[in-house]
Image 1 (spheres, rainbow, N blue to C red):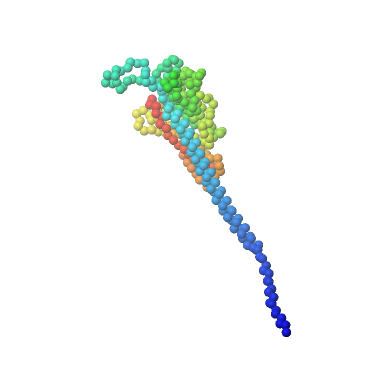
Image 2: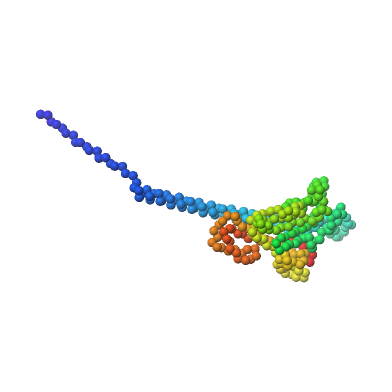
Amino acid sequence: MTKIIQFPIWKNKLKTQQGVTLIELMVGITIGLLVVATATGALMASRGISSTVSEASNLQQQAAYAFRVIGQQIRQAGSIQLDLNPSIAQISTSDSNAAMIPVAFDPPDPTGARPPFNRSTSSLSGTADPSLTTGYQNYFEYTTTSSSTSLLRDCLGQNPATSSSGTLAATPVITSKFERKASTNELVCTSTGNNSAQAIIGNVTDMKVRYLEQASNVSSMKYLNSNEVTNWSRIYAVEVCLELSGTDKIPTSDGKYDNCGGTSTSYGDRMKMIFRNIYQVRSQGNA
């Protein structure tokens, strides 16, 4: 008798592969967009801060350069030639006053062409525009070269007397006139060597100049505007204020600042920075 062996038949149950649902897909996309939006916002904020810091640094550098140029001319204002070897009798070295060997201030021009320097009228002047003009005597001095020359320069680094056709008679005084050009918001200078104004820095939206006067037999000083000055030889210091404005729009939240005139003013949508410096006029004293 034949025995029939039956093997069990395994039925493979096919499992259906499933993906993400539409809801899960939408949630994933939303999370991704939130991450991108957060990263973009952080990037824009970082760029805004970097731009603001860069612009502030640029305005500070411009102001520092302008004050360096202005200060150099103000501190030199009113200076005259000091001749260390004048054509006058010398004191003997055995004399008890040998250390007081005389020198000559504002000695005559060897060519006889240079007029004397008038410190009371040529050192400082100003207008209500405002503008500030400085002046000091131009002269030649001995250098390491074979011939003497002038080492003095105006606000634009020029001295016409040093050119091949220049003379002290034609340029007896080094002058520099500083003023703000309102049409271009530039601080410009008109110098001895150039009759047309040239820009020193830009972004200057305001400029104020005040003068510190000390009258004869008075120990205190007082601030004066240019139209109040009656004797420029009594001006011992000059205060210069510059307002510089940025070019990029920034949120200021209706903030205010004190401008050069001391008035509270709205920032608007630009960065505003006030720079103020006081310079002593070293050569004054003709009260």
